[in-house]
Image 1 (cartoon, rainbow, N blue to C red):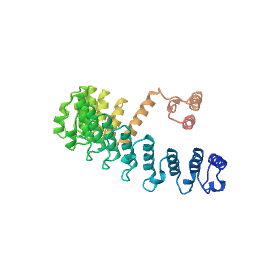
Image 2: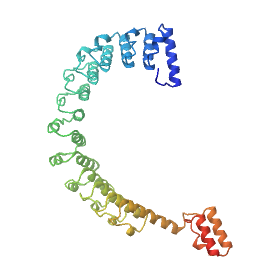
Image 3: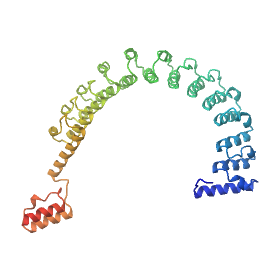
Image 4: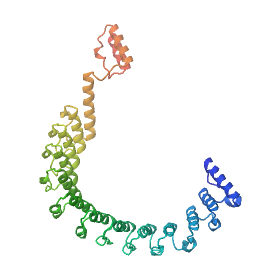
Length: 384
């Protein structure tokens, strides 16, 4: 074979060819097959099936495998080969092995995943009259099957216009004793239906908010707030998006004055930075100017948390990157001034001792931020 193979693959290949020859095949004829094909030939020989039915280098290893498994199961592979692809044949074979009536789904217009759903329903002894409609995709079929397995009347949601996500929520609703089909008929999305179901399970009335056409992310925050006993009704009418409401809710839960940022003109990232500051009891008035981006707000918040004088940084004309550089510089200055966290290296210490021994004032260069070479030049200059 022209394609390079590893030593391990060659060893496996040689071993398979050796066993195939032992079982009566011609070694030269085997050389045209790849390792996966050889494996299927060897497995077929050992199983006693007619390997000559699939011994053709043009046949994929997967088809070889399916042919072999069909022979082993007594399933007529050749009868279906020209009409169905290998995935469809696989499902027909497994159904045959399970003893289900494969004629129900042995139709070329079903793809393999649809066949699998019908097979699974038949295996459970379910009536597949509704489920087997080819107009349903496999995901819709699955939701119908799961509903039937749960003993539900699937009629309310077994409709082609409902995608599988809507079907799932309608099924979940029925399993919890709630019929949400009226909402689905009103064209509500699966995301909204999910919030409606969560509200009904918790005994929450979402009708006032549905009437105001709240989006699913807003409904989610209404449900969370009411589930947790967080009072924020005044904010549900303030044109806030879901993520903004989430920041307000978290602030109320943490008992911070949310009025500092409960303004729809802030985006949720700006709100978050102000909330973080309030939680740390910082003076957020320094940076809650609407003109600051959330990244600028973050730099100012971090400066305040480090107890820095932000007057040099706080300007809407400074980019967040500039603010970061300035903040780090202020931190470095304070660190150098304190002298608490910077230590001299051995080389720096040697330069200081040399200056003391020479009787010069070493204060001008006894600074950790100077390199030993810079210290030496200053020391030599002072000694002249």
